[in-house]
Length: 133
Image 1 (spheres, rainbow, N blue to C red):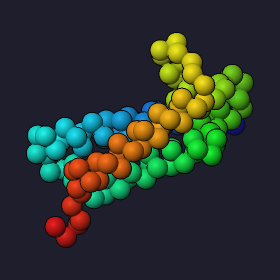
Image 2: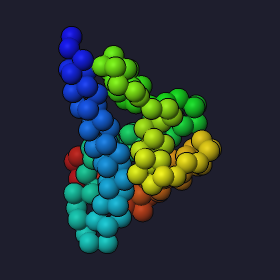
Image 3: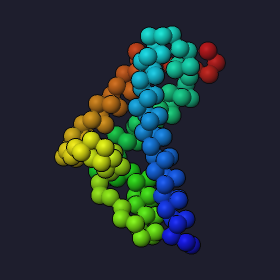
């Protein structure tokens, strides 16, 4: 396979990964804002389950010291294309790239855990509706 295809697939993974991160962050903002503005869609059980599961996986990975498989896969594709990958997790890499900020791994574990706790709290503060309700 041509190296260009590996880069295209790596970029597709990067975009998908970025969209997942945006879904988690903006989803939580939408849940709390939706509660204030009475948006009923933020109570959709499928939206809320997807949101909870994704952040739950992120928190679990951080506790176990596991790098996200999307990051690993993207780096492997970039390596096959002859392009340098990056060290650490997706979030650490992009935070460092965007904000020029580097922190010890425990800072990210705490941040993910606190964010996960906010998502879990949203289940009690902004209760999702079951499909039959």
